[in-house]
Picture 1 (tube, helix red, strand yellow):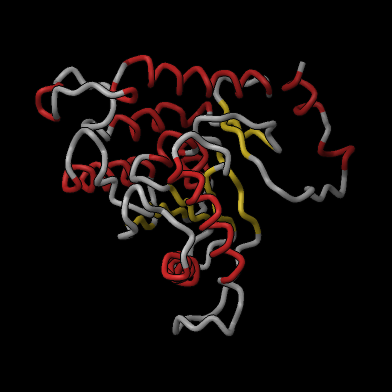
Picture 2 (cartoon, rainbow, N blue to C red):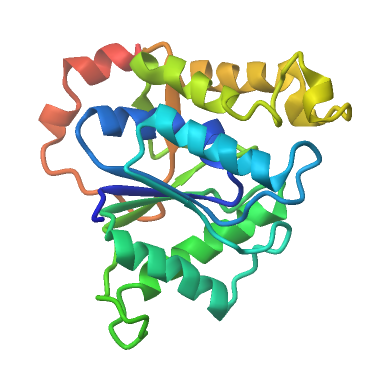
Length: 245
């Protein structure tokens, strides 16, 4: 299936926590969207791989994805190897996305940083015909980075206000991972991400970026290359000005 946007995360819940609002918005605009988790999250303190797979599927339905998949790269070992690059290349060539989302390379969790470099390299090499996977070569137009724990100066911010409620629903589909009063069902051990404060921080960050563009909720993104702009007069019009005042 050819899709427009393919978002990669190191773990099953990464996209929901970071750029789910944008994925949901793009789907509502008529674009076909997909999510690939590089690992099954098997090293997570809470839950099991089976539970996380069920939660991953439930979150995908909430986000309205056209496709989603969990790869078999080992959790805790998302390394940039030829074998792993080929796994990602096969997914890019299979779905032929115009845009790929990947985590920002400066992060706390090593898997996220390695995932950033892995996806960037795979997106480039996917366009080389002499790398044989039995598929047609395809290179996405752009790799766009989303923040995990550490912030960056955004290249742009997307207004997700109308879709923020569904983003929260998608996050809460991971009942084993995030705050849930039924702790005993998923294990008594509390983690940083299972506290109420963790979800509050996600909401606060979305409000912070929304405030930068004059809306309720926003998600920030980074591109490595300069962005082309043909008509600055149209682009920097009243809507833009109202958003930053």
